[in-house]
Image (cartoon, rainbow, N blue to C red; front, side):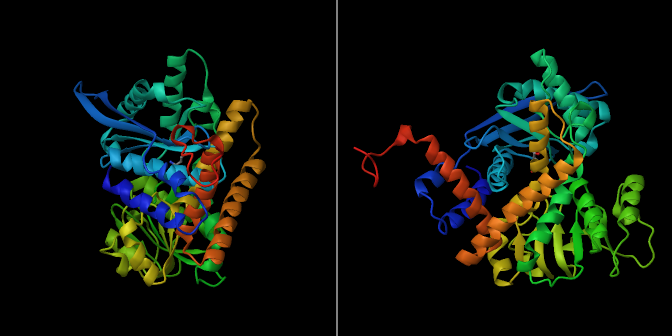
Length: 426
Ligand code: GLU
C-alpha cells in the first residue's frame, strides 16, 4: 500500500475512535475494491507515439455506483489515485449521495498537449477503461486539467463503443449533451456555501472576510467570483506564475481577464497591486486561506508559516495529514475538502439523475439542491464537533463513517461472519 493512502486513512481511523461504529466495518475501508492500471497509447501530432500510465480506482461501492473525476497531471500515480478515490468515498457519504468513491488519472502534462492530442487521449482512456465504467457501475467526471470538453469526447467515445446513447456514464458534460450549466461553477460555489455554513466555528466574526486564494483554475476562480459577490475581500491570489496582493481586495473580473489573456493572474492590471512569489500565499495574512491548487501543499515543514485564522480546502488533500497536529495546536481550523469541495459531485449527482430520468432539472432546483446538501452535511458536522469536542475534519469523517458503516452492516458481512461475536445468533 502506498504511503499517501496510509496517511489519509489514518484520519478515518482517528474519527472511528470518536463515533460508535464497529471497527471491523471500518477495516473494510482500508483498501480499494479494485484498481485497474493500463498503458494508454497516445499518437502525437508529429506522428510519434507515447505510452502513458493511467489508472482508475473504484474504492468502495457500498452506497452506490462509484463516482469521481479523471485528472491529467504529470504527478499522477497509483497511490495518489487510490487516495483520491478514498476521499471520494468519504465525500459522497458525507454529502448524502447514492454513490461510492472512485478516481482516475493519466500521468501526463496536459499543458504539453494540443487540442487534438487531448481528444485522442480522452478517447483512448475510454477504450482502455470502458469495461469498468457505466451509469450503474462507475461514473467519471472532470478533475485537474479535465473539463466539459474532455467529458464530451469521453461520452461520445463511450456511446460509440456501446452502440447506444448513454449520457449518464459521465458527468460534467456540456449542457448540449445533457450536462447542467451549474456543474462547472459548482465546486467553487459550494465552497462558499460551506464556508458560510461553518464560519461560526472559525473565529472570524461575522463581517466580510479577507481571503487569500491559492490556485485560480476552475474551482478557485468560481470561488473567488462568488465570494466577491457575497461581499468578501479576495486580498491575495496565486497561480503557478506568482502571487498578487491588494489589501482592499482584488478585482476578480480583472483577474479572470488576465488569466484568459496571458495565462496568469500576475498579468492583471489593477492599481495598488503588490506582486510576490507564488509560495508567499501560504503565509499571507488573512482570515481564510483557501487552497484550490493541488494536494499536499501544506505539510509539517511549512504548517507553522500560515498566518490565517482558518483554512478552506477547495482542492483535494491540500493539507497533508502530517500537518494536522501543527495546525491544531496553532488553533487553525481546517474546513475539510470532503465538505468544502463537495458541491462538484453534488451537482454531478443532479446531472446523473437528470440523464437517467430523461427529465431536466430547472436551474432553481439545482441551486437549491446544492445549498441544501452542503448545509445538511455542515450541520451534521457542527453537531458532531460540539457533541464530541473534536476538530472539523474528524467530525466530517465521523459523519461519513456512520453512514457508510450502517450501509456496510445492512448489506451483510456473510463471508467473514464470526459466530462468536457479541450479538451473533447461533
Ligand atoms: N473531481 C471532483 C471531485 O473531486 C468531482 C467528482 C464528480 O463530480 O464525480 O470531487
